Image (cartoon, rainbow, N blue to C red; front, top):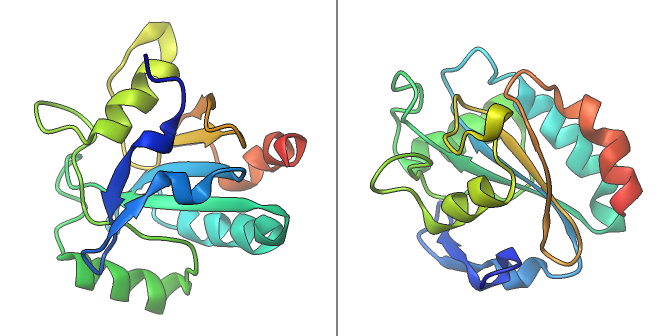
Length: 160
């Protein structure tokens, strides 16, 4: 049985396969994102968290998703350009994926099983659902889209 995220991989916006084992011994915040969402300004808060804690072994991994009212219509290149120009993000941005349904990315299937939502629901309700992962690759907590990145900072600091 899978107990951590290190056996998963995903493609980045350049189309390269990234092994999550590359992030072993780091605290991670894994987020499904979208460029046209009311929560899109959270990219700024995610970048601030990354900037403040990267040196201590913290990573933000962003996974764009177009499953919620088609709020991520662009290509991987367009999404990356938007994030770079609008928010100057420096954390890893992955290729667009599905987080629900038949084509759910295996990483998100695992995350949802390890940290179900309210009342045990497995589905992701909206963009900017966040999963906090400890240095051993175990999912510690799931946060609602409305939870601002700065509200997670204390939880991150405890794990670093």
